[in-house]
Structure formats: structure tokens, C-alpha cells
Amino acid sequence: MTFRGKPENVNRQAADWLARLHADDRSSRDEAAFRTWLNADPSHALAFDHASTVWDAVGGLRDDPRRAPAQQGLSRRAVMAGGVGTILSVGLTVGWQQAYAGVYRTGVGEQRRLMLDDGTRVMLDTHTQIRFRNRDTMRLLSLETGRINLDIARDPRPFIIEAGERRAVAGTARLDLRRDEDQVTLTALHGSARVEATTAPVLLSQGHRIAMAAGHPDHLDRPELEDLTAWQSGRLAFRDQTVAQAASEMNRYAERALIVSDAKAAAMRVSGVYSVGDPEAFARSLAVLLPIHVSAQADAVRISSVR
Image 1 (cartoon, rainbow, N blue to C red):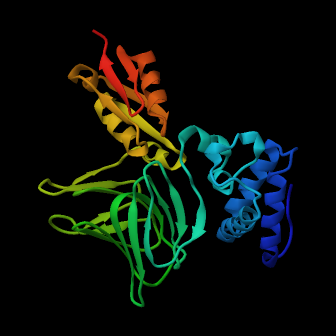
Image 2 (tube, rainbow, N blue to C red):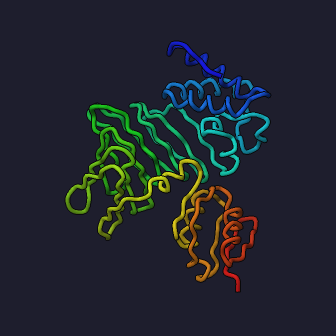
Image 3 (cartoon, rainbow, N blue to C red):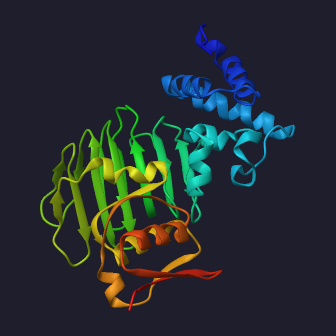
């Protein structure tokens, strides 16, 4: 299914796509073509979200894709994320919507995409909160907690990022920023940023990351960017990390906690890419590779070493 026409036809195109994606004979080719259309221009995502809101209002869609089988249709959050299968497997909800100056947050296990009123795109990870202020002389984004992917729009005003006591200034750039209390990491995925470091300011160039924590010297490195950004598709990549570290990361995405019961299990090493949102599935996949025992209760999943 393809579309041709002037930009003013985008709302009609969005409505046509919405109808096509809910047709009984929807095909994988249709879904691939839709994603191509969606990524072709930022206005397409906004038009599709608006069309989906109207559809929701008349009962055309279920609110939560996790409560509906895939064959019954796609929610706009599933479609915008690239497919209902991803949403069902990782237990996350993702949707584009127009955002305006203020506070934006996600709950545990939720992800959210925003377009700020300066055109900057932001993706919020689980349990994240930001504040955005659009001023005459600058743009200011504060990360209160959590993690974001930031695609800064071109603008003559500087884009200032605050995370606790740390601050960075960037122009047009794509950045990954994470804050866990007083620990902050900033990675330049594309472009660069000037970071106020403990001594002199640091120009963070493309592909580099700076890790900052109170009472510790700043650390610069070059991470594997594919692993670093895996969270945006509902996955986490572990490369020779301990089970304790992996469980801690997984716990950011689910209310049902992974508990590592003993030091021997905690120290075991794990590598691989895993979907988030289902701690029991993660634990049982580890049990295939490691000498651990998994005990699942209603409120927690316990991992212990095999004695």
C-alpha cells in the first residue's frame, strides 16, 4: 500500500493507514510499508496518533494492547513502536504525542515518545521524569530521574541539559542520558555536547560517553552503541556482567522483582540480549545456561545457586 500526494493530505493518509492496518487481510508487507511512511516525516507520526485518538473515541481500539490478542488488531502504541509483537513480549507501552512545556514522566515498565514544542524528540525509558522549559534565549531540559534518548531539533538557541548538579550544552545532536540519583551518564550518539565536568569542561564527541558520580573522578569511554541503545526496543544487552547487575537492570522494568538469594549466584556472569518486562522468563533463560535454581512467587522471582 503506497501513497502519493501533497503534504496537506497527510491526515487522510494517516486515516487510510489506520483502516488498512485493522483490515482482516493485513499483511507483513503492509506493516513494513507503514513503518516506511511513518519514518518519512515527523508529521506522519503526529497525524497517525491524532487519527488513532479519534478511532479510540468511537471504540475502534482497545486501550491496552497487552489485553488484546494480536489478531484482533493493533493499538496505535503497538503500531508506533513497530509491531504488536514487541509490545506483547516486553510489556511496554509506547506512543507518539505532541508535548508542551512542562513535566513528563513514565511509570515502571512504561516507555513514552514525545515531541517537544521546539521540535526536539525525546524517548523516555521506564520510571523517568523530565521537565522542559522553552525560553526566548535558550531551551532547558532537566532529567529528574531515569533515562532518555534525546534528538535535539535545529535551533539558534542553545539546548541546555541538567541532571542533578551536572549540566551539558548541545546544538543539533542525538544523546543518551541516564540519571540514577547522583550518578549520571551522557553519551553522544550523533553530534557532540559540552559537559561541565569536575575540572575543566569536556567536549563529548560522537561515540563517546562520560560517567559522572559525586565523590568520584569523571570517566570517559567509547561504549558499544548498539548495546547502549537496545533499551529503545524493549531489550537489554549484557556483556560479561554479573547476575546481580543484570537482575538490577531488569528490575527497573517490572514490579515483580528478581531477587538473587546468594553471593555465588550473584557473582555468576551473563552475556546476551534479553527482552524486558518478564522477570520470570529472564530468570528461566539464565537457568538454561547457568547452574542456578529459579523459584517464582506471586510478588518475586528468586534466583539461587544450585547446591
